[in-house]
Length: 181
Length: 83
Image (cartoon, rainbow over all chains, first blue to last red; front, side, top):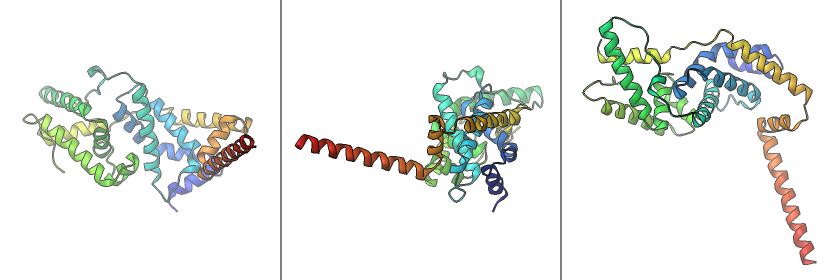
């Protein structure tokens, strides 16, 4: 029995405080995933809180034989993010994430230019491709995990990610190249 | 900086996240409120729906019961019409 399964068993037996351990482990990954899908820095924490509340309420339906807890939780987070996106107005450039980690002024300019272009091109991708790309590149999830979260076959995810990378490369050709794995 | 460095810097930026200090406490408070409400009204409609939706067998049972009741109703209706 994994440590996580043990924690879940304790929560289901009425030890609510054990849920803190799951929160501590997944708080940041869930918030980050929601922010990267919705681009909404203001409400991503509210959505994440909602995700954890739903996870708590539905914990009895989690089946460790069917998926990892993280995959199950990220599926809830993805669905909540998509619902939030449906309700949200279209994004403005000014809402895009700001850059960080400045090195020197010239580097800053180059970085900012590339980051802006990357964000714009990333947003222009079809939503399914963009989501698969985000989960693989920023969340560093395995293709198998992403396939489970998206509810599609592994090959579909590989194809979506490859297409996303290809489109980003094509769109930024001559300016910038996405490094190959 | 070369392309790879810039790409990694972008990834690093997307990877950084700050959460509020009271994030965990806020979620735990919501969970406690939920548990209190659940105990207060165990048999209200909302709790019943949540209970049903959390258990696959309960959902299947509900659908099956609905189907059987519907079928009986249709049969009775036909019998009444034919008589």
